[in-house]
Image (tube, rainbow, N blue to C red; front, side, top):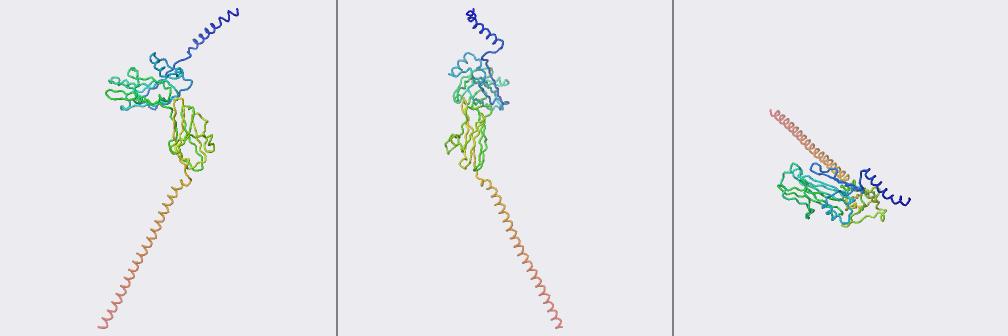
Length: 349
């Protein structure tokens, strides 16, 4: 009896397992496909950034031919653990200008890129459609009013710009820029003073790098910063995975220059650039000293002008006084002469 029971147990366990799976209504590997549509009205949408987590759903169901092609592209890559992403650009864009879409990827993914004519332009006669990465022509699939390519982005060499060129009555182009997540760094120079401490910051929103590395320029050479060796000069903050902070102690003028923060992902690297300017405390005083000098010069000029004006006014006043005195003297001499002539006339008479 025990032997017979033990022989039936695997069958019962298998039966129970199948019942549980049917009741749950799920399968061990449920496919998921995420679609993003871009046109001139939706540029800069939240689909600019997408985080591919470790818990992403499995590879989407494909046709037999496409699946074979994808497997060849993937090589040893386990495509059962990557996400399928779909991006689409609708043509033409605003005023017929080329459209571009930037797609950030931090790990391997299957990506479908499509360009499609808007419904009101479906009557246009398209003579030729070409997909390119640089000068390399990529085979594509035709759909209703659209053309697409299927890519397995398994390493950094697969990143880059993929363009769809439609030639007909006019040429239309849509470009997808596949890149590692972009680092957010301060664009304006960081200004600090000699002897102080400063902090340079880089961060990445929605992504988690595997590692961060800081570099500084020494003339034309870039040198990696090792804070464990130069602990009295540099401190690298590793508290948050998506943020890195470089603290520089006891600043000198030689610390001025360019610094780079580099984030490493499973799919490539990304760099941010910051500029540091170290000033002496005399530098902020230079504009103040220049202003004081200008004011002093202006006051001196005004003072000299006042002295000159007073001297000139005094000389003029003296000249006028002398002229008045001379006139008075002439008048007196004239009156005395007339009196003498009058007396002489009287004596003669």
